Image (cartoon, rainbow, N blue to C red; front, side, top):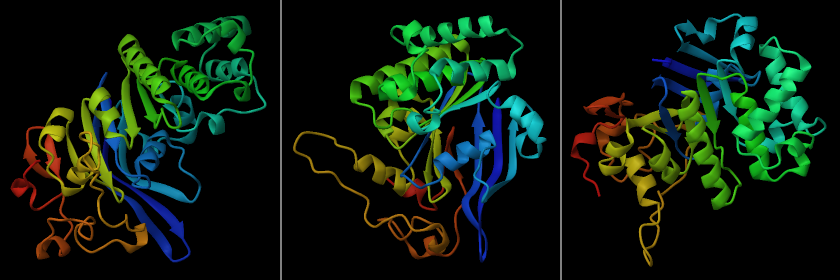
Length: 320
């Protein structure tokens, strides 16, 4: 495996002590594949990505194990992690306008990534910037590289972020909601671009989104997150054909299925991290709940080949 996470927990420092907000995450990311991470806003998807990249905010910390190319990232010295980040693993952030420096030109920001990790001259770096903008299908790259982020559209800024992420040829690219706030046409272009770059450069991709349609079309394996936990883990085909966790079923039922059919939202709201129900954390919203669900939180149970679900009734659930 390129990346393996075992028992990954993320804690928030509070006045009353550490609060566990991401709980016991296990991940396996193979070389060259696309792993989708999906769930409602606030379920811990982005925090998991930030923990992998080693850039959690100061009031958060991670425990457990994250192994990347046989190195445990959580015990890696800071200077070694900085050398790794940007070169061997990179991230496309959710909102490029807040990730790019508004007072620096695009060429400077991309060139900075290159010169930090590679021993090249200014002229060579400028040539690489131009080639990167061409690689991400930026129109008029010679002109774009001299612009500032505010002079660009959302789609163009996302292409710049992608160019920065792939500048040093990373083995792992984390794309955190890469199509947020983009219109449908540009969304399709960005997703197609990421897939093309993945195949051309033999990268692994962790694709984070709340849109199950994007997962269905672009990922090979998917983890569904709820309340800081992975509640279902399966191949994309298996998950969409036979989901085995009530939360996954609720997400699928919330999607539009046909003209004139009403949506079926999941009842209730996601509980706060410090106010989770006992036992299964989805029990207060679940239509299949029984008494045993509230006694003890289930682990990820093996349902079939490459399919696990955090539900004691998984084998009894029928879909649709």
